[in-house]
Amino acid sequence: NAGVTQTPKFQVLKTGQSMTLQCAQDMNHNSMYWYRQDPGMGLRLIYYSASEGTTDKGEVPNGYNVSRLNKREFSLRLESAAPSQTSVYFCASSGGLANEQFFGPGTRLTVL
Amino acid sequence: TQLLEQSPQFLSIQEGENLTVYCNSSSVFSSLQWYRQEPGEGPVLLVTVVTGGEVKKLKRLTFQFGDARKDSSLHITAAQPGDTGLYLCATANAGGTSYGKLTFGQGTILTVHP
Image (cartoon, rainbow over all chains, first blue to last red; front, side, top):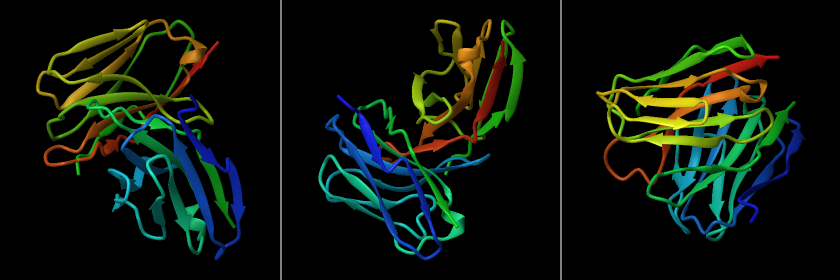
């Protein structure tokens, strides 16, 4: 039982390049989330998916797109990376009434 | 959007000391969660408090939810180096259908020196 997995763990991009961050969960959770974490800013929600086939914007969606491929997988795409997108990205899932979220280990992205 | 203010932002103490971190809002919380994040890892849930005045204990950690459900505190007794990390409070968006969306405070970075 791996919980929430993310790939890659580290990535360096040049400005303008694109990439997709992958996330998968094996807990049969309906809801999945993408956050970014910057120093002094806590966690900010980028996009979320309440269930398979649905996605919605969070607090900071600009410059990102998402795909809820199936119940297990939720990917985050940067179409044209910018230095302002340098951050640590976390995927999370939840499925209980208590709204407990389970997080992946994060992807550390640097955009030069 | 419900804003959460955590204090202090940084805390550096010696092993064996006690400490308290705070999470405050001008709005009423539906529920309040505390997470701990160790360096290089994702946050992990420590506790959820739901009822005003509620106190929960997890070994040396004591969590309290304010009577008015607008504030919460985390008290650590006899801190150990293993307690080092980022402590985050979070709350589900009040009202409506939130689909479990959480709003996080900016966190308290705790360093416990041996």
